Each structure stands twice: as structure tokens, then as C-alpha cells.
Image (cartoon, rainbow, N blue to C red; front, side, top):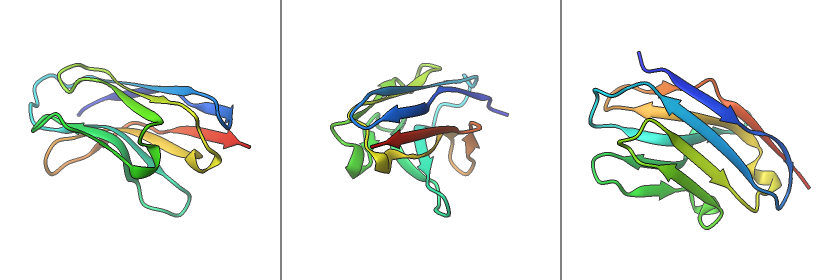
Length: 116
């Protein structure tokens, strides 16, 4: 069982900056995707910023490119999301994820609320 510990999040005014922090406990699995996903009410969870150990390429959702930065490296135990110039549409529950092939591990989720 992979443990994911999240922190950060909260309420912030549009245009501000916020950081989400995640630590995981897994050191034996070598092939996985790690990063942050978000979930809007009534919607499916979707990737925001993720990176895979297969190629090391960081994926960003189109609407966060240039504003969010995934900080960390797949080989480390930390994966942080730096959010800048946040917008009301960034309001969602954000989940840290650690996903080897065929299985998904998630943190408990942290609420981010951006007000205009």
C-alpha cells in the first residue's frame, strides 16, 4: 500500500499563488506516473500535472500551462504543485496520485477554492 500525504490548498483570491505538497512512501516500484489530478463536482478525476518514469515528460492540462508548475522528480518522494495566477475555474478538489500500471493510489484530496 502506497501512502500519499498531501498538504496545502485552501481559499485564495484570483490572481494569487498557492502550493500543494505531496509525499509518498514508495521506493521499490520503478514504473509509475505521479503528480496531481483534480475533480470538479459531478465530474471525473482528470490529470492536471503529471510525470511518468517511463520518459520523464511532464504533462500539463491545457488550461494550466504557464500557470502551474510540477516540482519534483519521479525519483524523489515529493511531488509539489505550484499554482500561480489562479482563476475561479481552478476551484476543485486536488488529489496527489501515484499510479503504477494497472493500479491507482490517491491521497485524500485537498480543496482549492479561488474567489474573484
